[in-house]
Image (cartoon, rainbow, N blue to C red; front, side, top):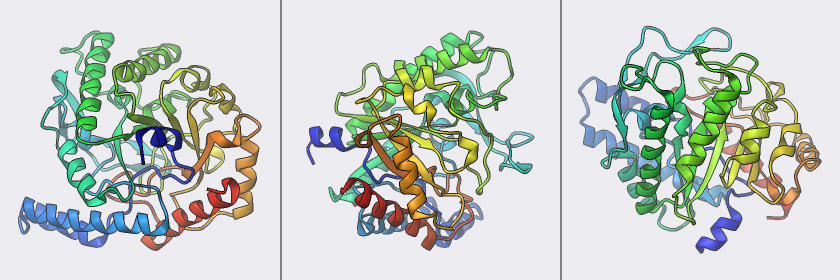
Length: 371
C-alpha cells in the first residue's frame, strides 16, 4: 500500500483501538519474572510468541491493520510516560477511583526533572521488532498516550515547572521528537489515547485539582496536541482516541462530547477521531456537527469492549446511519469503543468473544460500506 493510499484509507472502515486481552501464558510469565523464576530475555520471548499469534489472528479475521495488543505493557499509558526523560514510575497511596468504587492498581508517574524525549525509549525498538513480525501483511499501528495525559493532577512537579505553560512547551517538544523517532522506525499509523480530553467534557472534570477553568484547560489541550503535530512528517497518519476510562470493564466518568466539540473536534489537526458511543454515558451524535465535513475520519465506537455479548446488528447499522445526520457516510468508520485490555488486567470477556466482536465489526462494515 502506498503512502497516498494509506492516507486515504486510514483510519480503516473496520478498525480497532489497540489492546487485546493478555493470554494466561503471558500473565504466568510476568508472575514468574517478578518472582525471579524467569529472566527478562525469557519474558521477552514469551511476549514475542504471543504477539506473533495475535498478529496472525488479526490478519486471519480480515483486518487491514494490526497492533501488538500492547502485550509488552502493563498500562496503555504509564509504560510510555515513565520512559520519557524527566519522569519516573512510583506507587501512590491510592489508585484512581472508577465507577462502582473500583480502585485501580496503585501505580502512576510523576515529574522528576526537565522533560525531553528519551532516544532509547523502549517502545521504539519494540515497534521495530513488531513490524518485522507483521512483515508487510498489514498496516502496523502504534499506540501511545496523548501528550495531554501528562496534565492529570499530581504528575507535574510544580517546583520544577511552576508555570504550566513552560511544562506544556517541554511536553510538546518531547512529543515532536517522539513522532520523528517512531517515523524513523517505520511507523506510519500512530494513535494518541486521550482520556484527559474526554474528561474535560465530563460534568465534573476528573483527575483535576480545580486550579484552572474548563475553558483554559480545553484551549491548552488543543494547543498541546496541535503543537506536538506541527512538524510531523506529512505521511504519518495520527488519530486521537477519546476514552472515558477502561479498567476491568469499569469506566471513570460520563458525559457527552458537547463541551469540547466546538474547540477540539473542530480544530484538532489529526486524521481521525476514535469516539466512544457504546452506551448512554457517551451522549448523542450532535457533537459530530463540529467536525469539518471532508476532514478527519470519525471511527464510531458503537461496539463495546466491556462485555462479551454481541450487540444487535440492525441496531448498530441504524446508529451508523443516524450519525450521517451530521457527517457523510464516507467519513465514518466502525470500531470497539476502546481496547479490550487498556491495562494488563483486561476487561470481563473471553478471548473468543474478543475476536467475535472484531469479526462482527468487519462484517457490518462490508454490508454498510461495501468495503
